[in-house]
Image (tube, rainbow, N blue to C red; front, top):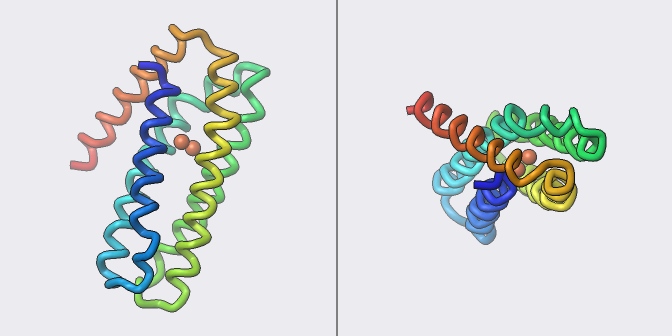
Length: 149
Ligand SMILES: [Fe+2]
Ligand SMILES: [Fe+2]
């Protein structure tokens, strides 16, 4: 499977989970915390595999390099602010405002990645290369799931 399709599908799943947190702000803090932990865990695996399988290859191609460097920047920012969120108790008054900021950064990154990373990937790599990256992505994901069991 083309890595572009795998990433788009995972982004859709993440967007759908984030959507579930909208309107949950008045709800039980424990329930909110569980959904957000699930989102952050899925994202961590997704981002880690992009960093392993995708960005280093893109950095080698002049037309894809800038998009890969931008994506690394987003990953760094998102990781740092997500750390600040998980350190808080969900009962803390800062928790919801902080989640809104984390969520905003994640959604902006997902859009930017689809606009610039995936489009430059399609231009800079052949279908065969993208399918090979797709196989590596799935293999790395299965290994990460296995490890977390
Ligand atoms: Fe990403
Ligand atoms: Fe992504």
